[in-house]
Each structure stands twice: as C-alpha cells, then as structure tokens.
Image 1 (cartoon, rainbow, N blue to C red):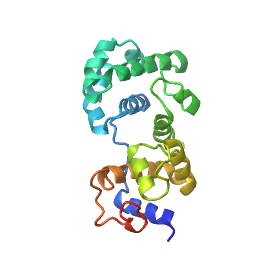
Image 2: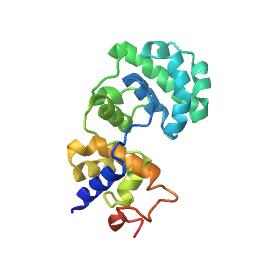
Image 3: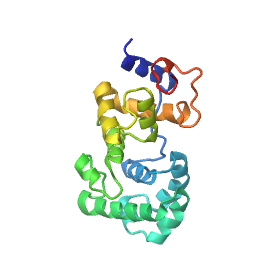
Image 4: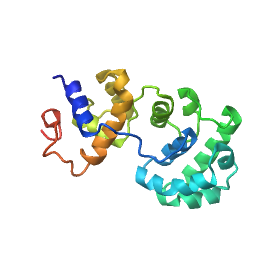
Length: 206
C-alpha cells in the first residue's frame, strides 16, 4: 500500500466522522468563528460565540455593534481588541458589498478583514463544498511528521504539497481528519505513538 493510501485508510479508521468543531448555524456564524479562532482553541471560541451570536445574529446587527460591547463578549479568547475591530468591519463590508451574505469567491473572501488563505479555505470547503486544504498548526505538524512536508516549509508550501499528495476529492475530508489526528492523537507535546497505525512512515516516531 502506498503511503497516501495508508494515511487515508488510517484516518478513515480513526476519524470517519471528522468535522468542523466550531459551533455555528450558518455561513456568517462560521466565518466569524473562524476569524475569532486565530491563535486560540475552538473550545475557547465556542465559549463566547453563543452570546455573541445571540446579540448579533447576522452581518447587519454586528456591523452596528459598539466596539466595547463586542470586546467584552470575546475578551476570554485573547487578542480581543483586534478581533473585535476585524469582525465589526467584516460585517460592515458584507453588508456594503455582498448584501450581508458570505461570498463564495476566494478573492472576495480574502479581501475581508481578518480573513487570510487558511480562513478562506475553511469557508470554501465547509460552506460551498469547494475542495480546499486549510493548514493550521495541527495540519502543519502532522504533514511534517508524516514526511509529506519538510520541517522548514511554510503554510503555503505545506498546502501545495498536501494538495499534490492526495486526490482533490479527498481534500475537504482529510483537512478535518488531519486536524482531529493532530488534536487528539498526534499532539505537539505528548503524541500517542504506542498504537499509532502510521508509525512506519512517521518521522517523529522514527
């Protein structure tokens, strides 16, 4: 079995139902949640978004929010000032340019405050079923340990190598599986290597 097939089979066995763990009910809420998730955990973001989305359920309401009110709600996630500024501006631009809807075009997404390539990939994949491979810290770590990417590769290089390595129709599912694997098994500090089905191709285990 080739290495790519071994990885896909192992991840299918371990995490057949891997999915986005940011709580959301629509495209707008997922976009805001992903922007807020920068440099923090999904669990921390999920602790503040119920109140945030209860008070500001759509782009129009968030665009009119007072900065200090949003800051107070999202204060526990860190970087709350810049994130509050970004999501209010983002909501305002959605209203002005996109009728309050999340755009499905990559260039449009990346023009929004706080939205880079990784966030755009998450939205394209989860909201619009566009094949994409978002690279976060978990995906980066797993890709390097499995020798798909080199230790010094940046996120752009890692994304390209992952897309070259796996079939396009698998990118969306694998993105979630890589995150689950990195979050729950192949952890940064104490990876659970003893019974890992990918020992034979893992640089860390070797």
